[in-house]
Image (cartoon, rainbow, N blue to C red; front, side, top):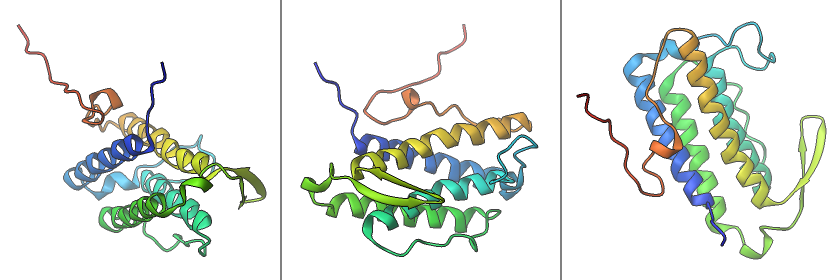
Length: 175
């Protein structure tokens, strides 16, 4: 028996996750975007906002590459303001969905060559799109951990408790 998790399921989950984070940041304040990553980071990100920007800009750049477009420069996008960040995220997600809808089905498993930083990789569009979504899924818990280490606790947003692929989770009443 084969059990399948679709790209659409992952998109639905990451869309839900983005909505949860947007509501959380709007309610708690933009200062959360300025929470630092600490001294043990890899040097690419200084704050939570930098990491959010990275999630959205990586998605945008991969789809730019796969679409043959010039790579979007997100360097001027502020990483300390919720609305512009998430508007950019909405744009990157729109482009991802448009790419998936328009890409010829017979080409999903053809190797493409991409230049990334100082490397050249060969991968299929299917793998690259999966990477974009898994990449995002990996980073949101990192953000939650950074905030939690700074005393800021959010909601529990595990995939199992999301509305994706049906199901329902509710709190048990205390006796």
